[in-house]
Image (cartoon, rainbow, N blue to C red; front, side, top):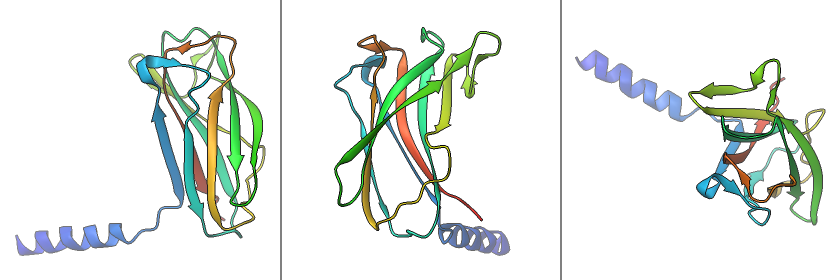
Length: 155
């Protein structure tokens, strides 16, 4: 029994020392109705300016969502600059394949890279992403969560 407890303790210590090379945060969309003025923001700190990063938008929706895609306006505020924006079309499904991403029952999650190539954060400091829906429908129904995931590219 002592050996078992020692192994569990050592495993916990080793796992707690592993550095995680990503940031992920999601915001809940109240009542599954995403209004134009509901613009979640996600802030994180970058120290390593020599590495490359993949930046993803993460979106969860129900099977009742009425479209195969969603248009998002994603903003990025760097430590010393104003907010820069880009519009991103996130394909959520196709007529032939159904919903894309991962799903369980009637909830589906899609993660899409928002840049064609890995991204370089040129300045150390705090970065903020914002995500707004820019579809023609307001509110946009059956959206559960939206978020940002930033992963360090492993070489």
